[in-house]
Image 1 (tube, protein in one colour):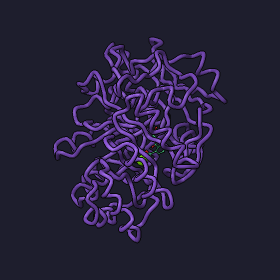
Image 2 (cartoon, helix red, strand yellow):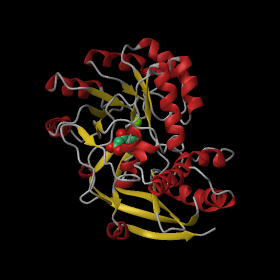
Image 3 (cartoon, helix red, strand yellow):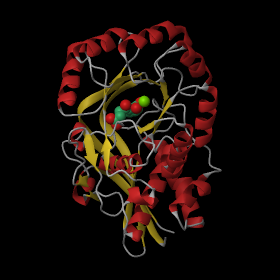
Image 4 (cartoon, protein in one colour):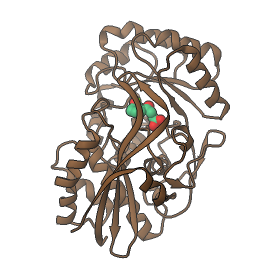
Length: 369
Ligand code: OSB
Ligand code: MG
């Protein structure tokens, strides 16, 4: 790859409705877009999924900007990667900052696929041309409001419903959803809102035939999760605790969880995401693709990774219209009967709309070798 420039854009898009988890409420979505340009004038795009505040993990929009500007982009100029799979190695000595790394690595994967004139999902070794998707529904001010949301997305065909839980918004809520929708594939995500002292409460969820409970315990824990998994029948799914294939290996060895949610940003990029997928596939552990309220650029990357063989459970990649009045890509991501048909165009497979990207750009900065 003959690189010519990297542009960072600070973006802000208003969401259709606020999204509430156990750690907070998001109204405006702030994120960073990365565009890498080569000398032939081609572009590759990536999205940094870090949030405005360090509530899901320690990164933020501001830390991602600094990491890219001061450390990661200079490393790319020092040793331009021949192949995007080399990028993770270039960044390996930089501790953590996974979302910053993933954003530029993803843009380089897109650029590489564009230059090779192949879809990104094919470049990654993906096979599926249609992917099953579910949806993640936030905490609401009343159970009735949540039930109305569930109803809407079940009717739209989503293959599984995930609801957010926290102490005080858990057993009764799950019971109400299950009672109203006896046959749906249902799961709950706690975003680390519990401790082992709540094991009985979490075990009570066994009565509601959940596919899994996602990240009930601390964001950095795999020990207590293993203790909890012995006390609950419902499979535990790990999200926040897994940042690498090494983390995944240790968690599986301890039986800290039986399912892994893979987020490209949380694990430092597509190459590491694929490595975690490969490990889980070899161990018979199902994986699915998580979401971080992405714009179309990040959404397109999620669609691409989900085509790998081991992504056997519906992910959180909903349609563009889930969060956005208008998305940054053409066509937008659409869901029919719970399925996204994977586009066969080169690169991420959706065309970034520069007009809309400009509309939502707060400021930008371009770096050259
Ligand atoms: O834990 O999966 C999560 C959103 C922001 C931060 C963390 C999570 C989520 C979601 C929403 O569940 C997934 C999506 O719709 O993009
Ligand atoms: Mg989660």
